Length: 299
Image (cartoon, rainbow, N blue to C red; front, top):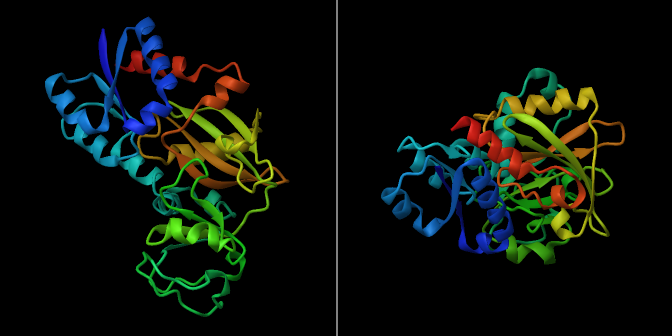
């Protein structure tokens, strides 16, 4: 029997205990012993018994890096974990690696990266030519006109919990004070997004999510969900994003897009530690079984 570790933060493990149990049950059927290991204890556990491979579900690239240094296979690799859990780094990476045919068209929202000062005035009133004075990746970043009524997100947020309208400053100024953020134009997509699940480097399925009385479409925030078929052109487009990711052929993650009325897709983010509850609630897919089957065949 192969030995594998599922590493979580304790709080996340409590929230995802059912998901962990699915891996454990399916693993028994396939010959893999999955053990939950707390992030606080992973080094101690691994030094006592080396696992055959590890699923790092902490969003922390240092955990993956620790295993990589010891030649223990880990999903996901530290580079993908680092990029996918920092929205601006991920966008910058795609800007440098996507093929020209994608970059020559509009593929992502207009974006500015900055650090929100601990004390600040009203960001929505900043003039076009005025400079935001803050410690940021781009010192002197200017908020363009289209972003004054746009969206502000922490670079490390997930599940829609740290996504706000720029003009709703009273909702985000305390939460995001001192934090790295991206400010983006608001793409008119009728509060919808398309989550494309990727398994072993291939498109697994696509789920269309639609917000209810909220500009955010996250399922965890109460949005509606349905599986959506992709056109050949959409599949080819999405495949360009998948194929330029580090070790794209390994693991299970999602790429989220904002669908336009004409069928074009605008990149939103990569969800490296993707949740799968909507697949089990609204489809017949068993992605855990398929993932474990893939891992068993690989190791």
